[in-house]
Length: 484
Image (cartoon, rainbow, N blue to C red; front, side):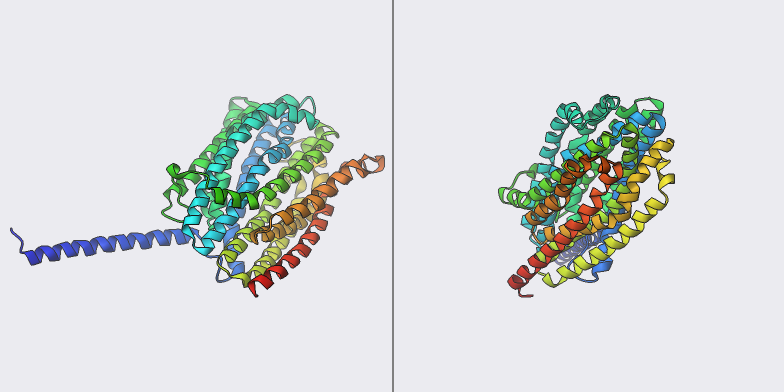
């Protein structure tokens, strides 16, 4: 039947109205979907939103450590103490080699948080693409360094001869997955900056379960020893990286990623370096001091090395729980500075410090209380368990000091001050540890493993107090600038 012109126009308008309704509904749905993951850090309850931000991040970090612990547990139970020491003795070295590039992700985090808070979408997009390409280059560089220099670096660390071949094999395979590791860490840092800590948790959970299953398959069934554990880790890292990148590519705005647009924007790269390089350098020197401490631990023999490795793995759960508040201090401070909500900065710091104090004291002492049962999951050797308890008795009881120190660093970096906390941390934490090792620790009366472990809490306390003084000075200076 032929339609009249008026009917045709009405039908067209009807279709247009319907199409507009569909578009509007889609946009509302997308905004609602984004709102489920992003957190407005610039208004409302600070405590409630910090907990909303940190709990998924805390769970994510704890899950990651659980999956890493599975590596050590499977190796310790099914491959022996030498294999356990080989995997555990690599921790400090891996941190040393990766912390430089992970420090750059801190720069990306702060920059994204500021642009997100200020609603500067163009700058935000350029930062995202610059950071992700930087992560790709970082991973390639780490793979080359780790694979080529593994054995020689382990020799410099005085790794016991019976452990060296296994440790070198583990390290070389592990670093094959460094590109994926960097992509995941930079991507999740960008997602944290806009308040999204839940999706990285989901992706890590998927990858972690696969990691554990592959551990069991490669070590127990295929008898691949440390090579199987390393290979399982590499595969799981690739999965987590793929999921994060896919998520960012699916975003419609804010942190949307397009492979074709990956490039290094000179201005954003410079800003990332200004904040990230001091964090990188601090991470390297921190890790270097831990490598020196690990070398000193290695001098006490394989039993102490194995016990130290198991204890350090357990205490890592307390650390990452506290570190979530360090990340919160960076992102919350950065977003509020970007949104010019300067009056919230002090409240963010006080809230984060209270939270980290409670978590550090409670979790740290729980770990000590259940130390023997926890260590028994890693080894059946009584001597190894006793060696592990010596570390936990010193480090975990005072671990809250480390968390409080890190929150101060996070607040200063969120304010845009990255060099100052770097210098303080290098002198206060790293410097004191190295001075102790090369002076008093050389004396016979102080040459004990307990004396070595006490360098941690003493350096944390001194560094924390110095950071507090620095924050007060910076805050007063900025208050004059902001007029608040």
